[in-house]
Length: 387
Ligand code: ATP
Ligand code: MG
Image 1 (cartoon, protein in one colour):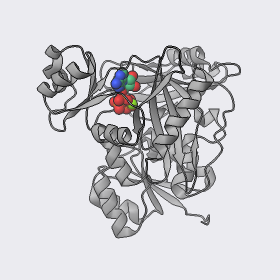
Image 2 (image 1 turned 60 degrees about the vertical axis):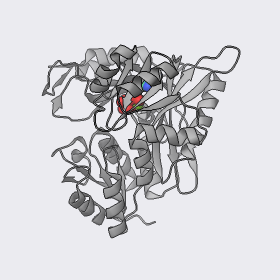
Image 3 (image 1 turned 45 degrees about the vertical axis):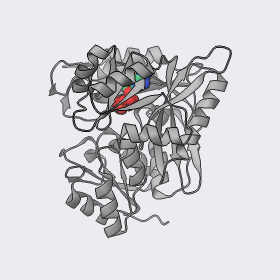
Image 4 (image 1 turned 135 degrees about the horizontal axis):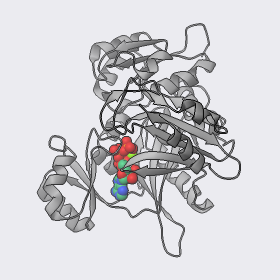
């Protein structure tokens, strides 16, 4: 591979905050980004070389994207694997990670089946096509169960815990699983949630230090590393992450979400929750917290450069800035001076025009000294207000 004034160029399907942070990380390597997103002026637009405006599955948009770049990737699971395969074949532009891997991950049932078959530990689950299936699944798995739409869920939308057989029909309606069906999972009584960002390179893999993630209302709020668990459990999380990486195809970064469940007299158990075939919210802390960020790692992997070292600089915590509004409104963040005056604050604002309830608008990271600065990042987020 050579560096020149205008290459290599990566085409990214999706231009949200992940695309924006990818472009920020690509720039020092001399790698340029062209993104495609249906929303003009998407968050990545301001840092990428160019934006094509078009739907994530629009053939003409993806074809034109493929024609002007050296390699294609995606930062959103709504990218369409069939269209990616078609434009890749016609233009000869490779796609990383492989569209086949995206296809597997897009459907939570297929995803669970694939990893279960490969021997990766995960919660017990059942296929659910209607309320009768859900009642039967709950009787077998034990109530309550977690029901998830097979496709299209994100940030906890598309997931609900179901208490009893009486709630089955309502729960299915709520997750909107009418069309695509659902999957019921054993409701894991976890000690904590963990995540490992894993990367696949040309002929190597890498994992980042284990992250602990804190969810409220099924949405990720804070991430911290090291996770507040013991070394044996962290090592087990890496093992499970490596077994997941071995089942995936193509290069790039993957967010591997895990549950840690307590076991009497034994090391805690690690179960796979789900995999994202892209940089992940649980890895935003690596921008300041690690020698190589997850975004740089994705760029390196996709382009075919050697993967970077994943060592942590120090204990790190990040917190999401979520839309604290009750209705959509023009996004205007106040309290920025106060937040930045607090020690060691790194602020990332994604530049979204509209704030919506619980929408991810930005995040804050602090690298600490002896332990992950969880309450300091929470304090920074508290000082930031919309309006
Ligand atoms: P995101 O896009 O935020 O990762 P998602 O909508 O794809 O989320 P999941 O990761 O499957 O959904 O679930 C969101 C959260 O719901 C999990 O992080 C966890 O807190 C909870 N959850 C999901 N599945 C289970 C389960 N089987 N048992 C217990 N809690 C669960
Ligand atoms: Mg998740």
